[in-house]
Image 1 (cartoon, helix red, strand yellow):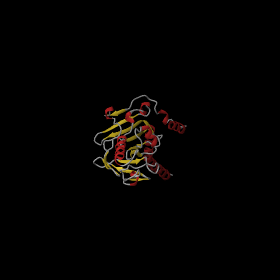
Image 2 (image 1 turned 180 degrees about the vertical axis):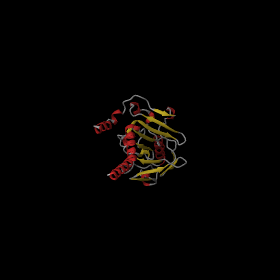
Image 3 (image 1 turned 45 degrees about the horizontal axis):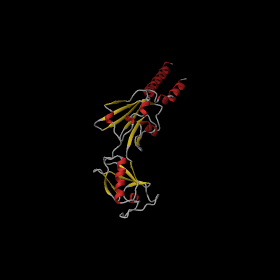
Image 4 (image 1 turned 90 degrees about the vertical axis):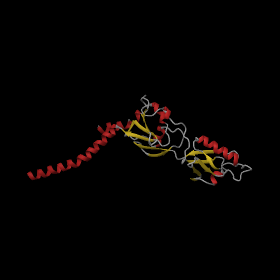
Length: 255
């Protein structure tokens, strides 16, 4: 009977998600702290591609250009499988083939695409289509999820629920009402407490993840009790064994 009850509790773990109607809580966090679209910083790693690559499309290079549309895949950058990465220097510029230094720090991804595209269009290529991805953005997730660790932010406006899905979902020991997002600087960290029992947590802007966020999913009370019982059992069992041995010896001597 006890096994059936415990199994039932486990199977109902996900049935309480998005049922309550309470808002998110936080510590020292307000809507003014919500950061908009990510802006490129020094040391970021950019993946820059010309979608008008000659391997896919035939393009006539600019008459004044000495290079063709392979410019982004024939020189500079490091990467795997043809995707070339370029690191933003401390001065906020990135060095691109045939262009040299291009200022990108402080720009959004879309703004960087336009700046690079305009520079290539003006000096090198005819009708380039530039795609920029920021490949080093990540969050750290640990606690009661199936695959904790550092997880990349592969798209803009990634939500907490999506990232939990990427991490394999909650374990049956997770406390869905106690999910913490730790955000901010080392000197001024802020903690956002998310209750996944709240339907509003899906769309709340504070639950849209930002680069460097730390996400912790707490363990539920039932799992904590079980763990405490196991710890007590681990401590008590050797003592009980010694007592049993002593009783057996005492019984033998009395005979």
